[in-house]
Every structure is written in structure tokens, then in C-alpha cells.
Image (cartoon, rainbow over all chains, first blue to last red; front, side, top):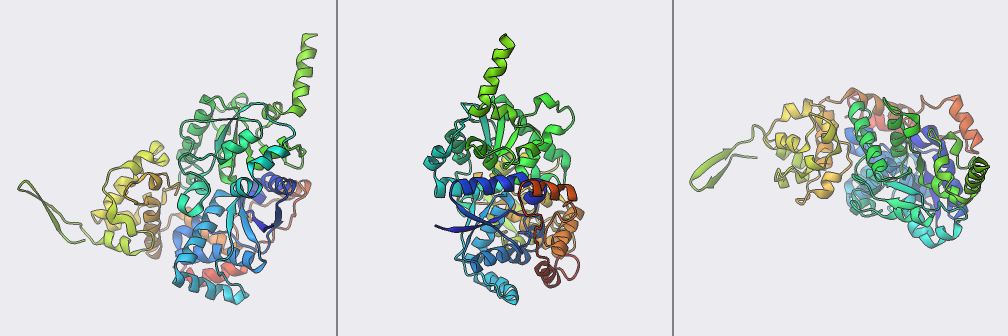
Length: 304
Length: 175
């Protein structure tokens, strides 16, 4: 079986460590050999990428070369990182001059990118390595039909011919996993549109308007929560609900995919970092068996 | 792009770009697709930023490149407003990627010293620390990681990025 490094990127370990913890717990539970990666650097997405193409290729290229050195493939859990690593792999595999330039820099650390390393987004591991049947078998506390909205993340699914994760306009993988966990995946307007996260640095107002529209559309479809596959999307779709006029009672929980799955697989909430979520996921978890009995008990007590 | 004359039922229209900027973009990695743009506007129609911004219009920005407005485009922050969500690229039937074209514009602008402050400072952080969130990693977050059973030593490397800074950004402006 393939051995993997999980490349967390810069943001997850600091802004959303629960995503990291839940990823490791769920992968372990499902029998995927996933290891933490150290002595790496930022993948260079957006900021270095926009300034200098060679420097960007070198930053992501070094991460790929380190994985090669250890004979492991890479799992990325952030949309920006998975996009960068896959894009740079594509650049290095198709541009010999660029590859030579990057390898010349890597040689100072005795590293070399040859191209044998594979990069997968977490979604690909869950769908292709683990498989929906194995996920279904691991579910002990299904969500009992709660309506949920999948948000994929632009850099997770586009450009489709390079990242090869899912259909770029009609993606299914998160929806399928929601249903494997007993939820009811709903469609909503603007499903494959951006969360607005990448715009935060340049224009926060526009970024918030884009994210808020998504929340409005998700609610209009009757969803009680959102399931994400990227750290930036998760933070952005949570954060826009705390803006002006955002009443606490109107907020809907935004769960990362492994948190969502882990709860249905019976992994305890502390391990999944649920208490750290800014919007309590209880409204969703109450649909799972474990808490359903509490709900019923509360209703019975109320009747008495 | 030289002068081009189109004859349509005897009516002569001359299109003369004010500079060869489109050719320059075409020669930059990522900019190859610019000559295929037919200005249909599906990029702007698909764009989440355009929905909420009153000034960012990808079709219009590509048009400015085609008609040769080199200084205006390179000195503007508009090419830096693309989120690279690539929905327009997915929908463009001519195979044009505004995201890639605007990356090419950003690379040229960087070489000429036109970088929005937030890009400059964030890139500087990535190169000096090796990662982006060194300043944000507080004791509280360390405690959260500890509670989650995660390693509190994140082990980021910055020696490599220092070498990249020297090699690619020694002018202080990105090239």
C-alpha cells in the first residue's frame, strides 16, 4: 500500500488545527498510511506564484522532491496547496528547462525532482484509495438524512485537466461522501463558485459579499450545514457569518470533510476538534444516532 | 500586433494597437492564449469578483491588453484582483485562460516594480520565514494543538527560501 506524506500547508496548522487532527484520525481509521511532513516550506501559492514563476516552481518543487526522497506520495488538504503542487508538477514534467533550473537549486540540499511523486487531494484518497463502499462500512452513526451543502473549493477542482479531482462544473465526490455518511446532499445556486477567500487581501468587502452570497444560496436550498474540502474555504465561509447583521441563531455550521465523516464513524468529538469550531456543529450531530437518543429523550421530557 | 485592416462590404475599419503589448504577453509563459480571445465576455459573466466589484471586468482588461494599453495595465491593480478560481477558463470555448494571462501580466509588472503592497509584504514573509503564518502562531494555538495531540513544533524550513530570495528577488522588487 502507498505511503503518504500529508502536506498541511501554512494555514491549517495555525488557523484550523482541528482539520489537521481530523484528517489524521480519519485516514488512520480508514487504513491509509499517512505521515506528517517536516522541514518543508510554503508551497508559494498566490503570492510567490504571482511574482516569479521560477521561484514558485522551486518552492512547490522542493516539497515534491522531499516526498520523492522518502519514497512517499503527497496528500494535500488545502485547495491552494493541492493546486500549487499539482500545477508545479505539471510544469516540471512538461518543461525540461524549468525542471533543470529547479533541480540545480535543489541539488544544494541533495534533493532532486524526477517526477515519480504523485500528489493527491484528500478527496481523491477518500474516493479512489479508500472507496465509497469502505466509507459506508465505517459509518456507525449516520446523519439520518440531514440536508447538507458541499463546497468543493476552486483550486481543488480546477483546472480539471491538471488537478484531476472531479468534474469542474458538476462535481460529485463530496456529495457522494455526504450521502455515504447518511446525509442528504442538496444542490444550490452557485455551487462551483468561489468562497471569496483569495480576495480578502485585496478587497475584503468584495470577498465578504462573495462568501455571503454563498451562505444565502446554501440556506435557500434548505441545507443545515456546509461540508468543505479546503482550509481557506472553511474559514471564509465561517467568517462571513460573523459579519454585520449575522445573528448567531442564523449561523450554519461549516465542517471540514474529515470532521464530518469522523463523527459518523464514531471518532470522538475531541479527537476531531469539534469543540474548536467557531459555529457549533451540534445541530448536525444531533441527527447522528448518538445524540438522536438525547433529542428523543428531551422531547419525551418536555411532554411529561 | 501590426495594423490590421478588415474589409466588410466596402467599409474599411483599421485596428491599430497602440503598442505590441499583446505580443509581449503572448511571449510570456501563461500569456500564450491572448490572441484567441474573441471578446465574447463569458469570463466577466462567470466572474464572482465582477458580480460584486464595480471595476473588475476580465473581458475589458483583456481588451485593454489587445489594444495595447501597456502602461495602464501594468500600473493598475486590476490584474491582481483575479482570484484564479478559473471558472471563466472552464467556460471559455476558445481556450483562453484569463487567470493565466493575468499571471503573465503580474510577472511583467513585478519585473518593472509594480506590485500591490499586500502581495509584496506577504511574499516577503514567505521568503524570510519559509511560511506565511509565523507571526500568527501564538501560545494559545500551541495549546490547542497540544490538546489535539498534534506536534507543536511545526518545523518549517526557511534556509531554502532565503536562497530563493537571493537568487530571484535580490533587487528587492521580485526579480
